[in-house]
Image (cartoon, rainbow, N blue to C red):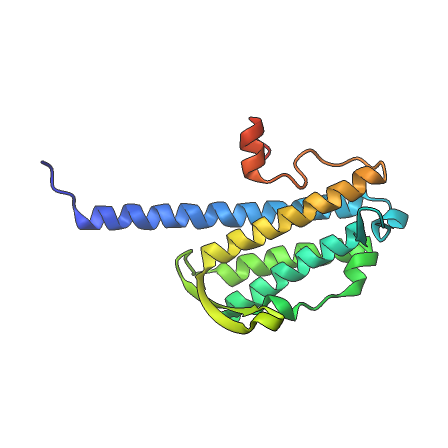
Length: 190
C-alpha cells in the first residue's frame, strides 16, 4: 500500500476548493452578464412593463431584485455578515436600462474585489428573517452563498423569461435555465 503524503493531499484539497470557488464566481459573473444582455435587449418601453396575468413585477423589477441580492452578498462578504432583507431596492434599476446595465457591471467588479484573498470555505454569518416565525443568524460559507445567489438569480431570470415570451420578445436560450435543467436536457448552456 502506498502512503499518501499529507501535504500532497492538503494541496489537492486546496486546489479543488480554489477550482470550485472560481467556478462559482464565473457562474455568478455569467449570470450578471446575462442580466446586462437582457437589460439592453428589452425595448425601453417594455423593460418596466408588467404582464399582470403572469406577474405583477416587470422584467426590470426581476433584474433589480437580482442586482440587490448580489449587492447584499457583496456587502456581507466585506463585513462578514449577509443581510439579504436589507436590499436597497433602487427603483431606477427597474426602469432605466442604461442605469441598470451600469449597476450590474459595477456589482461584477465589486464581487471580484470583495472575494480577493478569500476561499470558498471561509465562513460568513447570514441573517435569516422569517417574519412571524422568528429571526436569527446562521453560519454559512462563501461558496454556499455564491451558490445561493446563482440559484436565486436563475429562478428570477426564469420568471423574467416568461414575461419576455408573453410580450413576444426574444429570450436568449440560456436565460432563466438552471444548469441542472440544461444537463437534464443534454444541452450545455454555461
